[in-house]
Image (cartoon, rainbow, N blue to C red):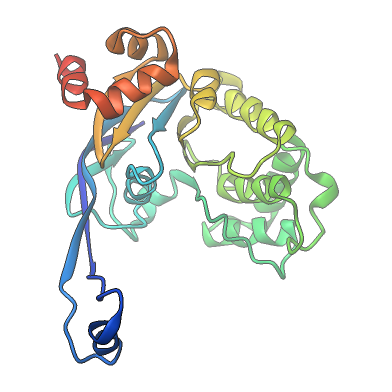
Length: 277
């Protein structure tokens, strides 16, 4: 189980230089100072993701989903708030919590010179697993993900679906109870998307271990078909949460896309106040 409590994250970057003319030239030469800009990427995100449940983080691009998941996975330090994983406080570099999470980032990050098998083995060793255990777990994952035929191919040149399968197997090699997926269906075709959806449903089930799964997306259909509960994020804040039927009821809509627009953009303050009551 993952409990996220009031996460905040702000980034500071150099301001933009003047667009043209002498002012722009002076900026490029370092003769003028750029004023720093503060950007609030996450401004109060809270939710609970239970075991045996797929929790969807739904928001438009730039809403703060990826930054939130990076803080949950201890890849980024929060300015405020905290994350509990299986009743343990998450801190960067603390193995006891990181070993309980499997993280699939949007970047995938496969080593192109290694085979799929070697990419998976490498992560298993990083998690302190014995090689016999890594080998057994790799065979198991390759069977479940139907990737036996690509195990000994270098990942350079893999299709999006093959890259996703390899990255997911790598994230699950140590059999974590909690799985964090940042927009995993990006770039996948219909067949690969359906296969991923079925695999996640199985992982959620008692037979698959009753995993706690957090799944971020901006695709309405994925949420409707896959998620047991939904957390709507807009402008870095949690603005609504509940099941799909509950969110439809909160928004007073029959179409989920219309409900999302209503909750995230038209009346977000009212939506979260109603949800919290």
